Image (cartoon, rainbow, N blue to C red; front, side):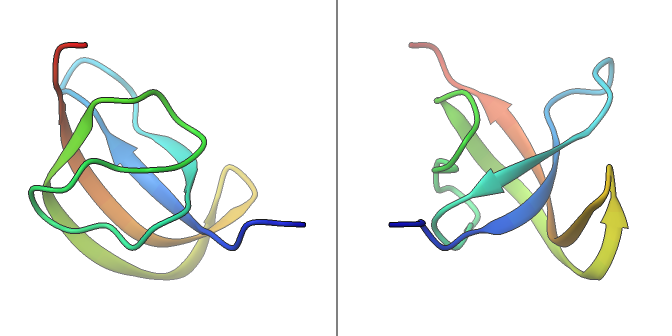
Length: 70
């Protein structure tokens, strides 16, 4: 069974290029992203996107995260 999800453009830090990831739960400020990406990424800021294709995927949300230890 497929898990529904969204494509998110994720900004980890100023020195890393943003990457498109699949997320499985709606993101929220202060929440850890859950999806097909490394654990420990907590949303600091987010904004909706209109489904613009980035890396060949229709991105619906853009998030800025901080990595937490662990």
